Amino acid sequence: MILEVLQFPDQRLREIAKSVLEAEVSQELRDLAANMAETMYDEPGIGLAATQVGVAKRLIVMDLDWSEDQPRNPRLLLNPEIVRHEGLEISEQEGCLSVPDFKADVERYGRVIVRARTLDWEEIEFDASGLESYCFQHEIDHLDGKLFIDRISKLKRDFYIRRRKKQLRREQEDSGHDRFL
Ligand code: NI
Image (cartoon, rainbow, N blue to C red; front, side, top):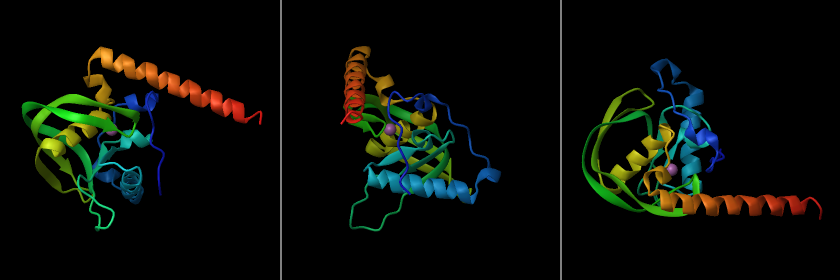
């Protein structure tokens, strides 16, 4: 099932997600993870956090190098946590499904060690660099109620917020207009 992805400035994107306990790993949670993966491929994107579909739980899905004609194998991860990091790099043209029509360079750790749980409650560790590292940081930020636009200059952020507000006003006007047709 495709889920609705919340978009800035939806306040639910600012919620801090709660850790998932082992006893909470239910069929419902597995379905949510599967639906999140389906939604990520549909958008399309390479990562999605539960926060983005309005669920404040520490669950992310990721798949960095999927393609249309290959079998898909998304990572479904609970309680992902950066346990070590090193270096600073600039992620080039980072974007987000919740921040429509905008990309920016963001300062990110170059390498992160991430610890998480699978849905079978196995502990799993990743040694990620480059895009994989940026993606982990981006999705974990979502779980903390943060967006990549919080990590760019105020000037660039304000520029985006103004443009986004205009866009939303236009959409509202258009839908208001429809009602009179
Ligand atoms: Ni995002």
